[in-house]
Image 1 (cartoon, rainbow, N blue to C red):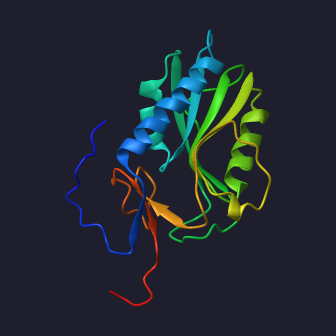
Image 2 (cartoon, one colour):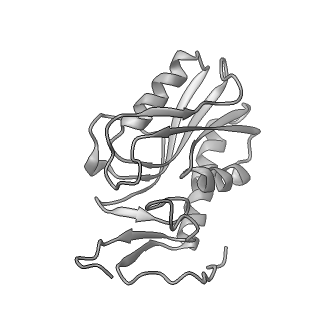
Length: 187
């Protein structure tokens, strides 16, 4: 995949961590792992809105096994860079998941609280199998232990935007992943 030019002026305090090419390569590798692990099965991807929509879309198009998908939405951040620690279900799945092979697809795992909540929700619905996939893993902020099955990149303790991830609902459309080094003065 070619590096796509963006017409958006990227602020000076944004630091590029992963290019669109880095992302594309890693998504293909992850899709290969999942396709191998789920050979002969149909996998049902459960994307966590809004951040995981871009990643899920790319992952879905790269899988070589039959796949379906649905989305749910939870809230734990609001418009802050810190999780509130309280997870609320905002939008539930449209279709039942009982007896299905489920992969929870997240944009980023941070405290682990959201993923634990969704994992428990899925297990209570008597799924056949449950795996967890995240594009980014930020283990330095963990509040609860979570075991991941598929991880794109492990990142340091910094706030990131791009490729579906946002800050105050902005910057999701950036083709790469950028660390935000918060400026010390108002611009």
